[in-house]
Image 1 (cartoon, rainbow, N blue to C red):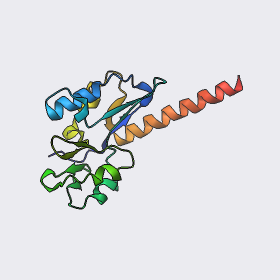
Image 2: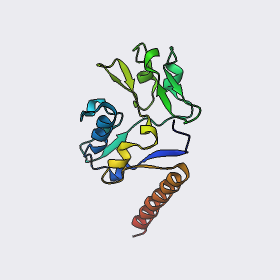
Image 3: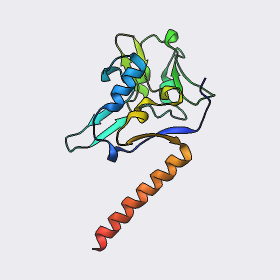
Image 4: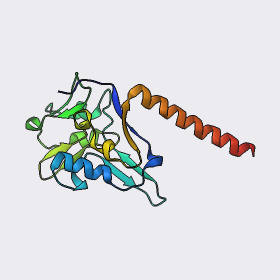
Length: 163
């Protein structure tokens, strides 16, 4: 069993090239086949060349868990991950509707929700991302990186205004 490591998936959309490697890595890791439709991560691709990988954020107070009337979705107190207890699932898809980010998918074949489980502490999406748009980092490191990136954007914006 994976222990809580205080690691999280850090997604940096600016680095994403929309290649779909994360989707393929996830689907082969979980389903044994290259099929993005069953991937627990989805890359949203926009016309302007903007690509945004989206996956479960493992919320502190997950709306999907609160919406699940059978207890099929549970927040693991040890790992901090929201897991699916498949035998309890009745296929109502309330978890999909409750997720404010749209990060819970549903498999019509398996009749169950599909959501990120961080591959037991070794997320395939992060491991195979060629541009490091998805990284699996200690929470503190991820937060520091985000702050530095934001500060650099602000500094660049100020420099452009001063010119």
